[in-house]
Length: 126
Image 1: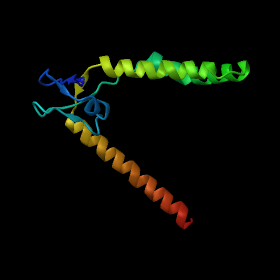
Image 2: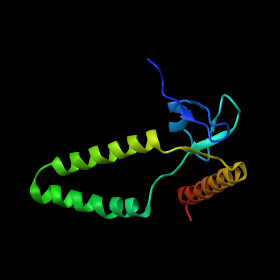
Image 3: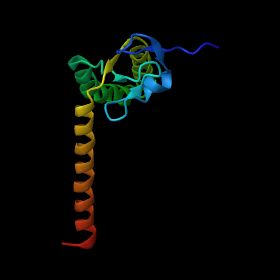
């Protein structure tokens, strides 16, 4: 069975594995085995999708509750999974800005330090 590969945005060769693309982000970019370039999945979400998720989930849950059936929930889950698979397959990877990725790392580290300080303060008492 031949594995599907994804195109590297640096060298335009189809060498990045499915797992490499699936697991890639700005904090953990995929490394091209051909040219060594860093890339990540392009976020293909739109404002319309965000609004549909924000307002659509409560609507579907209420519809399911009043109709006394799980079919609206099952249909919604099926649509969300299908759209995620289609985006994964057809949305190209993009180049990672390493300086921005370093900034993300430091921001995440700072957030963890703040949470640790807050939890320690709450655990030890005022």
